[in-house]
Image (cartoon, rainbow, N blue to C red; front, side, top):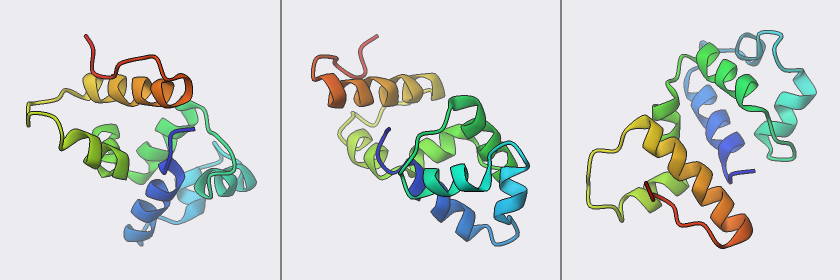
Length: 108
């Protein structure tokens, strides 16, 4: 699991006080699975994750930007414009590289 997904999601939800956990989950994710995701004991599939973001009214790109890893990694870039697809690709390759140590992120 990519580090800090659950904690970053939880921080955003906490800042949006009008969004209860129940409303964010919207019967798409069980309470126990949501809790395990937030405390990083469990992974969540992409469809469920995107539904959680939608219910929180947060764009995927905004969430990616708020991840601590993204801020650290992206500040080393040449301050170029990065598309949402490129950000997503970067996160996937970064995760694979951390796991398997052979993929170079940000390759086209």
